[in-house]
Length: 226
Image (cartoon, rainbow, N blue to C red; front, side):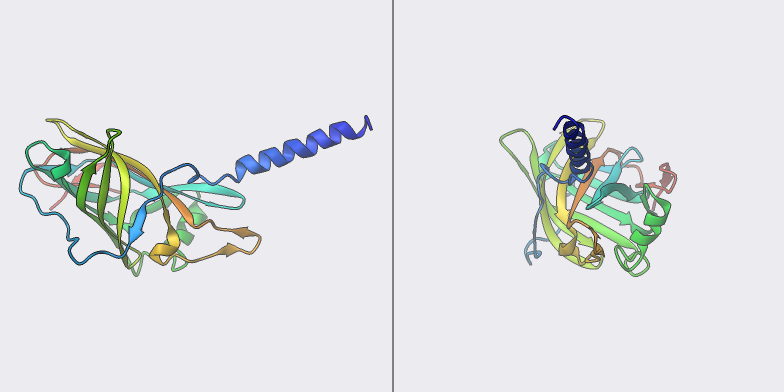
């Protein structure tokens, strides 16, 4: 029996490591509410103080499969935020993403993610988000609702976000999960290494007073937009 105890400990340790490595990154994160866009839920149009999404912003994601996870995101995107009377609930957020600027932590994977198996960036070179409502929550956060057009599929989504509005700019940060199947991304992965449906989205939107939109280019630097 004594000779078996170390072996059992080794097996238990390996199983623990495998369990940790395979953990779903979206576990414990809020899940976005996704539905068909309502006819009345048009992008909010406000005439107020305008800010431009700055080069400090980040739009990224974490996808996972049975054996592990990968980080990714988009290098290039642009957008504006309009705010009336300094009220975050009045804000209108518009973002356009260059899907061809997709990156990941693995060069081979980046090419695969751009292919028709996933984002199909040649067919769908842009993705857009336009807010339709922002509502304050009791815990000091906000629920942002808007129309997301991704991979040729348009859905209404709602997710929690932390928002800060100052004289110098508007910031919004959020982490939430979406299901890739909702947007027509159905590639299953290998039979013994299935890709999870949940994808963790990470948003860190920074903005500055607009004098012309900023575009985050492929090197993560600001370039003048028109």
